Image (tube, rainbow over all chains, first blue to last red; front, side, top):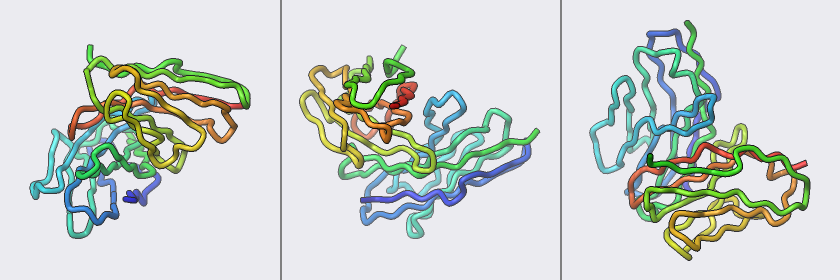
Length: 115
Length: 111
């Protein structure tokens, strides 16, 4: 089974600064999808960004961007110009491209944003 | 409004008392799935369904049952709940290789 590792249980960032959340994964597949989800205190799971493994270009969504290193099996999330509303749990997730019904999540990183 | 709904949102029960958590989606999605979220473990997949009458086990299926008799509904059944099933449960749905959409979550406490 695939595994997803988030080695930073908790991080802090000053408002308006940049922070990077780390995620590594283990797989023998060549076709897969990677996601970052945000979970604010409301517990709702919100998709932040997604990356297809066959695309070399890193995905970006406004202030959120990823650094996808396929050979290193690394998928980090960069948040620029951090805002108080970015404070949440962030989960990295892997979806198989062969059995796309299977999802694997990391243990999460709690991001604190200091005013 | 496109959404995934779960009921109840909060539930306190006792060991051994059968319960069902309902999940419904209005997006005509083929795929539906159940997860449990526990501190330090992230989300773990319990069961998933590729279409009506087609279900399969995820990573932590023990103690749970599911059924998919209609495309829109995917209930999670705990026949004999135990305290180790105390958790936050999420239902999700999706189509093909698109992303999945999550319900609001159900917080379950088993005493």
